[in-house]
Amino acid sequence: MEQPVPGRSLDLVPIEIWALCWTLCSRRQIRRLSLVCKLFRSISLPFLFKDQSFNVAAMCKDLSRDNINWVERLHHLHRMAIRVERLAEPPFASLITSWKVIFGTEAPVISQHKDIENIHLLDDMRIRVLHTFCKTLHRYPKLSSLDIQRNFVDTAFLMTLVSLPELKHLKFHIPDKSPELYSGKILTMTSESLQSLDLSRDTLLLDGFSREISFPNLVSLSIGTVRDTELLFTHIVDRFPHLELLAIDSIQDTSPFPDLPRNCFPKLCSLTGPPSMIEALAPNRPISRAVMRQTWRMDHLVPIDDSKQARIALSRSSVPVTSLVLPGLILSLGLLSSLADLFPDLRELTLTPARGGPGGRIGSCCQYFRTEETVEADRRYPLLCEETAFDDLPVDELSDAEEEAEAKVERTITAPRRMNSGHIEWECVKTLIKWMSFGSFTLPPNIEVLHVDGSLLYEGVCLDDKYRALAGLTRDFPTLREVRLLSSGWTWIRLSQEESSTLWKADRIGCVRILLPEETSGDRLTVGPCYDTSRFSSGRNSTMFPRRRIVLSMRKVSFRAKRRRHLVRAEQASVT
Image (tube, rainbow, N blue to C red; front, side, top):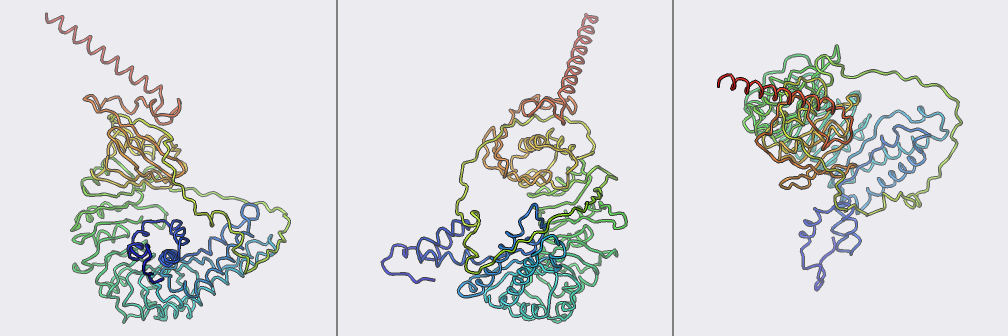
């Protein structure tokens, strides 16, 4: 880093203050600052180079001569190989602290695209990227975080991992077929500094690490698949005494969960796993965040709803639960009310509703038949030059422009008044929309983040239905600041809140303003599940609330009221 020069105005501010200010800047803004002067460049280079990543699997996936230009993919891989080679040289190697790499499958691309004559160039460039990274990994002295996803591993690569003294976070996802995993030589010299460990299978932990190694500073452990639950927990109870985060995606062991000592994992605050694991570990521990994984019945491929006892056990945590993720459930108003009662301090909630109710189909299988067509072979042979590889980059990779336009309100929606929706049983996700719109959807009083996920391709939920649900949630829960509904890919963020309106923003949609209705004494009207929503409906034929049913329902109410008044008058006349 450049030394301060006496008398220069920039040196009046310490370098630490400049660095602290730039932590609030985006990557593109820091890239602009690096072009101002030598001092700013020396400060900004660590911000620009500390986190590096590349994805080789994405470059070799879904190749099609008609839809994707494989030549552009080849040039991208070529630039990737050159970048990996240059980053391993000084002064950039000493600035890198994090690497995330995804290599993907080992199968050659040439076997899948025989209609492209020179597709072998893509395989050659992919192998070059792989070998270059493996050979230069030991050149990063300050590397503290490593995320590797690859389908094969060799002894030389494992020895390279051993030579990284500053490694603190390791994510290692490789197949369970490599014989080198059972050598007991993974990170034998860096166990003292390791704080976070993420492995694809439990065999990597049981057989890949020596049993004599302890991990005194490890606070986070994540495992993808566990085959032997009792052996795993017997192995980690004594070796990881200071665990704060434990995550297991799936357990293939059908035996009951083992009994663990009550004093194990006293600092555990985040827990991810199937309901049986949460039921065993949650009570009397400071669990504030829990993620339940779906339990599947493997003989029928049907999800099992066994989370009731796990939710009760989680409520007996020694601290309030503030974040909760629940798997596919048959939702009901009683279930939502029980969640609000069990977890009154909940701030973040993610629900994945089941499709179709009890016994409903999870998905469908479709068979597609491809007709063999005779196509002309692609005989293009791209020329790759090291000196001109970065001359013709796409505009998006060179531009520093940022969108800083003001939020534009696309639509204004009036939230409906709360109404008594009656007893609506769970049928499909449209029932969830009705609950949110009518005010029957119960959540903890201080909820801030609500995500409703799930594969809802065939449910027919349109954008107007989601607008109604968002309007109802805004009316009932003023503390909400983030909402994602029905896996639409849009996350609504609350931008501002006024006395009578709220502004929400989502990517690719724009902003929507929710107008809150004025509360009156006759707020709740018993008119059934049909009411006039023409003020915030975009069309005449609403699939959720047909207008004809609304008019008929209101006529029935008016007729009954007139008849009741007539009977009262007749009774008063007979008395007098």
